[in-house]
Image (cartoon, rainbow, N blue to C red; front, side):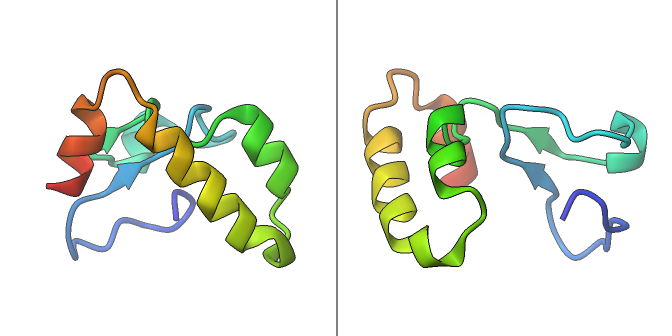
Length: 79
C-alpha cells in the first residue's frame, strides 16, 4: 500500500492513474508508477471498493488490459 512505509521486500510499484493525496514521490519510494495498466476511472467508480462486485470488476479489468494498445508497462509489470 502506498501509505505504508517501504519494506525492502521487493519492488514497489504503483498501478493507479491518479497520484495519491498527501504522499510525496520521495516518501512513496516507488520503483515505478504504471498509470497505463491501471483500471479506467469509469471501471473504478463502478466497483467503488465494494467486495461484492470484485468478480465482475476483475473480468472487466482483464478486458481493459487485453485491449491495451501499448503493452510496454504491462509487460514490465509481468516481468
